[in-house]
Length: 267
Ligand code: DGL
Image (cartoon, rainbow, N blue to C red; front, side, top):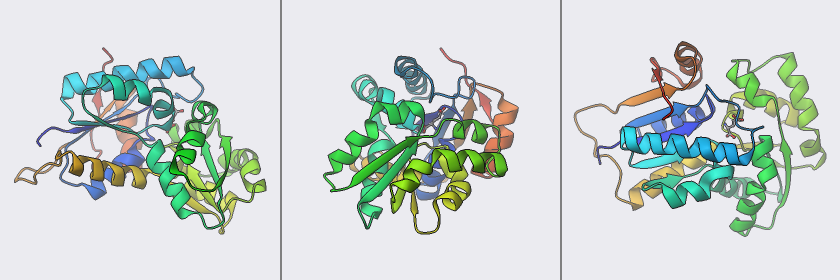
């Protein structure tokens, strides 16, 4: 099927999912939108995030004729997945259900944690997704306001971010979890800091790989995978904010596929 997969996030975070997807499905065409002009989504009211998600999803369907949509943002998945599944006429894949399944598979003690934005954690979406797995686990959650802003500035290590991580992760450490899900697609870029604060005995689970595997399974089941042809896959990266910053930091975070960025115009 020669139509691209569409993905969106509030900014650079969904690039962690794009990286995993390109590695797993290198023949797929991709259109990625980072809504950097309006990030962060985490502190915004759910109703506003729903509207942003709806605009981006319809933009990808109408302007780019995407065959599937990956909501590469936990905050948008938490706020808008039901709406997108009901309205958008293509396969919709979120990050929350695959992440929750990967979390409960990875734990040995049953004490698990999830961290995310204020919007994601406040929505209770992970409590519901973990309960839906049927696993007998005890979940501790914590919102981490400020993490996304560090990533968007390109500051993924150092004292400032470590001090913030020590404060925000304290309740998760006290709960004695053995596995922690990074329930925001920006957080894998902070994995070194988060891992150092949590210590070597805590396994970090990243929803990017789990989402790429879910996308592979769902596209295969729907008969939507692209047949590899003579043309190499096309990966397009778009931003609603400053495209030179998007190409510069995005290229450093994602890798060589992100050489150029294009301007995304909201409808
Ligand atoms: N990357 C988004 C997520 O997974 C959040 C970003 C934001 O707060 O803008 O939740």
